[in-house]
Image (cartoon, rainbow, N blue to C red; front, side, top):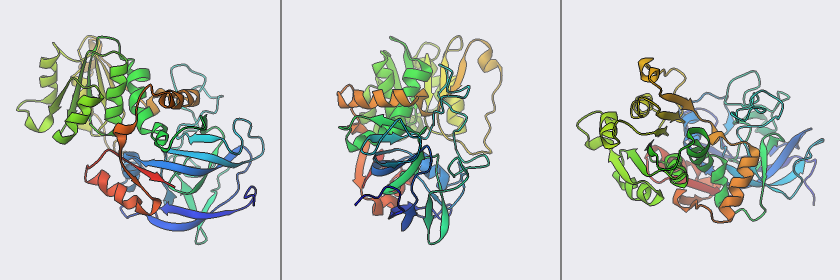
Length: 375
């Protein structure tokens, strides 16, 4: 019996308030309105950014259904939707693409004016200012226009990438972790053949950045982290050496500059700590080094940046979702299916939705890389 046009009752992991475990609830998911798409989720990764919301490093309205790294199948579409149809396999995009704003129309940007990271009048809501989620008679907010910790979600038709029907459950990781790290190296830093690189933070995004540096042809790739047990995986991904920040007797950037004849060509920061961001910048070659920041910092954090660090030619850049627009994500999934790269290195555990708090425990305990929720 078709569910199109009807309210769907399903299970979702609801964050009722910050600093509390998620609660598995039965929610109601309303049908999509004009230019909206309702998706039956297949899988979702659990990302550190979701954890940042729970710990208030990123602010968004509560109660909320988190999750922004997903893969699903279109269940139904609202009026005016032409880019997907029921039955299509898709990745929800936390970076939308309206195709009309200055950011969308620039070849040098992938950040749309409609990006929702918890700020603005309609934060955590659809573009008409309402929600498609409710639970126990209460409105539930969405997160980043995606909300993948639910069996069914509703997204705007500008927040979706159609992908190959053969995309396996692991492809959900292209929805954030892999796309963010890999793209930071390929698209944002534009790592060059024969160059030297340093990647700070050896989690899922960091490993993906190492993979991007390797595929771009970097000859020296230094993995920087404090958990030695992750070094073998970093080396397997393409790192040529690893530096343990706990073993050093001098500042990290001085060590890296000594290792690279004055500094790396490219530094990619994936940790979200202000001191690490500064270290990444200081580790680059003063004349033309490029530092890319991706980590999520607290709204109150600021960088103590002296202009002299940039004056001689360094470049400091930010990167959201690795610079990818929707077409790039579609191609990235196809490349994965064609085995141009692997995602196996990212997957630490495969869990069910009712085990989602175990995934957050692993993030907080700094064990594993990525958990995948399979619906």
